[in-house]
Image 1 (cartoon, rainbow, N blue to C red):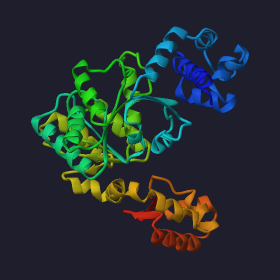
Image 2: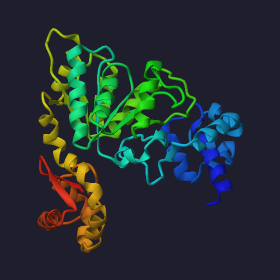
Image 3: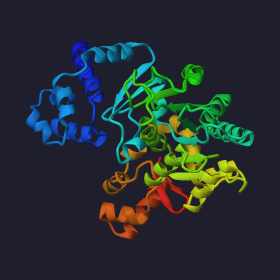
Length: 372
């Protein structure tokens, strides 16, 4: 694609992401039916209304904010800035699996981190000293194992999680509820810059100049949990934003870990509520590794073996390839594979054993399999 065509395509993408009063899933549906953002802006109003778009949205599509789009293009051309759509190969695989994945991500820093195995750590903005120490310790030790630590760049425990990963020379991703040019809180601008400098990443689904409006932060939390294999809550009051992240994680079928505390500590009440709802009681790092330990090992070693793994997959027989197509980066049961592949249980079991011996899948706790 020539540069002028690419520039034009990006302009329509940026214009679409600025459309007001429209839900993420509606944008996905529009693109599914109309193929490209440029086509959407050339579609007649009566057709757009058939997709359930409000008059406010249709009026915007007829007259986009091209002056702001120009600034988005300038941002994208700056070194270290990236724009990743749902259809790009760099879009995170786990995030695609959630109910309403972002249509695109704006990223400053290292885009390769999006495909790494991640644990999110979130918690109170006004934590106790113990909460700070525990968060840093968990983040540092998990980062040393090769897991990327993902959090929300908020004050308090989110910041401690990022600092813990950086202290271990590990990887960390900060997910914003504002545009990348409008870091919130302001006190964490230096932390955001440090994350980028240390080859981490700062990301947002919002255009770079979007202000930090309260309505955006709960939706940001679905991205934090959606990127991650599991979410650890260290301290959280009742009805806190951290519990929203945990709820998203549960809905997305991801692991939720909660650190218990004193019954007299109001910051323990949120964690205790999560434990009642089925979160895993977490006192030490082994409690997390019991669930994601095999994946942590792969995070540290998989990159060196990708070429060999690709060769192993090519050598599989057709039935094994059919089965492998239904095994992703989330654990899946034998019963699910029997149903998805329309094969008998003995055949599936035999194929899984051979694929495990070949090193293309691995068995997780609970008798479920994931793709290496």
